[in-house]
Image 1 (tube, rainbow, N blue to C red):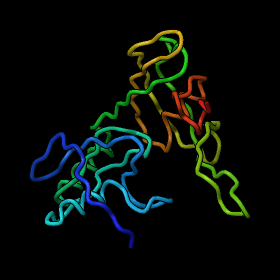
Image 2 (image 1 turned 90 degrees about the vertical axis):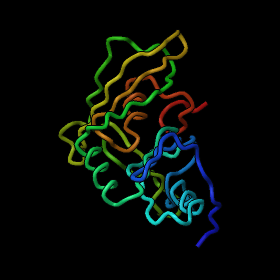
Image 3 (image 1 turned 135 degrees about the vertical axis):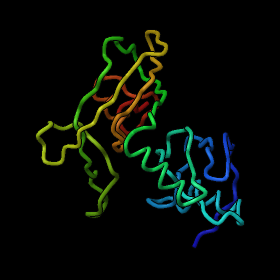
Length: 190
């Protein structure tokens, strides 16, 4: 085991069933894939007397936002069911390079996962790309986009995803030619 520093994150809401916390960018939600611990492990260390703490859903490491953590098994199942049937709308703010056209509202492009070649025959990093709808690995993916603010250089988009694919927003936006600012994997390499 690794040493996990206890950390309490900004709590936005809490009752006996679950808590909603503000996850900062750059923090993994759980340990694994090169990260020895994440938010959930730190939260458990900070609250040793809480019997049950489980992630209801995940957010990418680079994504900041509201993370729900269940404090009872019944709440975990109930909230996960809501996410599964998409009763919970997931809306994100994304800053992209360039002026997004106001009439471009629906991105319906299938995605597939692949691995970059690693060193010495090992698998490299996981990536996602747009593929044809009839590709055997195609996962249907739907993203809705609304322009919140824009100038010539940047657009602030309100993005709602109807499917929750890995890197969906980043890949969909970049594939249209408007990568997320600072995204070093899918487009804005400076």
